[in-house]
Image: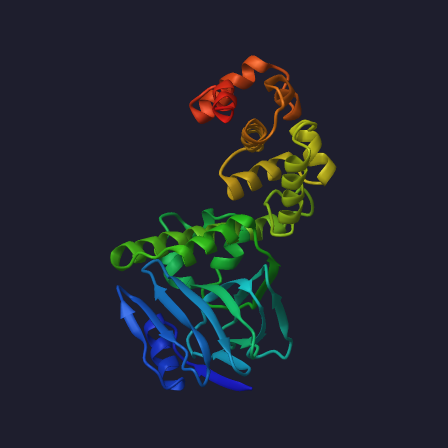
Length: 337
């Protein structure tokens, strides 16, 4: 295994060290540092930036040709690391422990090395890795708060009050769909300069917020409310159910209950995936189905109303015209000309 020792804390110093170790160069733009892997080492790139509030954002989108270990071994207190693994798998070890933690796609961890330790992140060879890491400098983060630390919820106080890193902290979980959506936004954003720096700073703080909410939700013995990656399959099942049975659907509460997901989570999932409520999605699919039936079949409008699960022809004509700008009979007339 190739071991890269990183004694730096800031993005600037980390990337300067990585550039030397990889025998390449790094670039800087508005405080964001980046480098591409040389072809003899692998492919892909790494980027990172620090913000005044103590939060740093690092993105890895790469594939090493052989196993690599990034050993963050600075003598200073290590920042908290919030890792979100989008693709592939990673391993982690605290420097003063022999226990190996395994992180798979769709999972996240909070790493808090104590003052005697550091973090070793192990990347496999010949496997695509896509991950986002938030670094949180405990002292800087606490210093910029506009309220006394003691006013924090107990669960957060235990994290951030330990500014001298007396304790080791490790928390492993599935990340939420909101977190996954934010990470996708980070990778999709293409603007540069001040716009990119401002966007990354805002999204990094938003991502940290959702991670803390997830951490708090995990502490609940029951009744967890945050939508997680494992819930995505249930939501997709609901989508398939709606698409295949548009004429005969139960009410939304019953649909959610049949799939074993709360209605609150189901509605949140549709907002994240489709930017609409479940009812709005059903209505949209009904109107799309009606349009296809008008264009490709000889069914009467009354038959089409029944086929999409509605009862009123007049109501159908009203909502169809609101969606498409013309009444359904005009579509049928145009297909016959």
